Length: 182
Image (cartoon, rainbow, N blue to C red; front, side):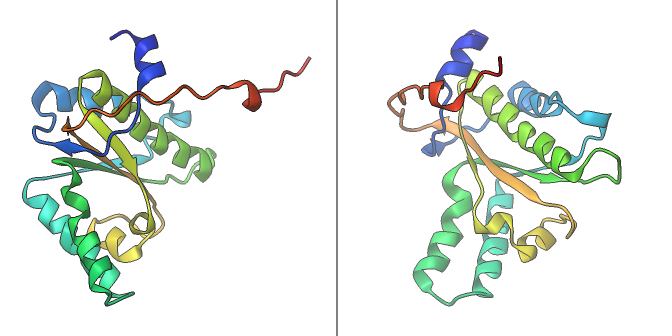
C-alpha cells in the first residue's frame, strides 16, 4: 500500500480481535506517534499501553468511575466490556508544558499522535478505532491512569486484527469545505 492509497482509504474498524501488533509492528506504531508535528519540540503527550491483564484493570477503572454516577446495571455492564473491544489499547494523554506554545497547540499535537498511530496500524494491516467519550474526561479514570489533573486523555486507540472487514466508505467531497482567498 502506498501513502496515497493509505491516506485515501483508511477507515476506522471497531470489529477487532487477536492478534494485536507486537514487536516491530508495535515499535513502528509508537514511532509514528513520535513523528508528529510538535511546535517547540515539547513532546506534550504520553502513551499508556493496555493489553492482557491491563484490560481487566482498565475495565475496573471504568466501572469504578461510572458507579460514582449511576447504579444502572445495563450501563455498568456496557462499561465493563468496553476495554475488551480490542486486544490492545493505546491511551494517549497530554503532558502539557509551561511554554510559549499554547496549550491548545499541545493538545492538537497529542491528537496528531493518535492519528499517526492509527494510520500506521492501518498501513501494517491492522484495524483500529479512535474512541473518546465521557471516560476520556473523567477525573477518576485520569487518576487511576496516573494522568495529571491538568492534563487530558486525548483518546483510546483500540488496535487489533480486523475480524470483520467493513465495506469501503464513500469518499467525502471536499468542495463544500474549501474557500479560496484570491
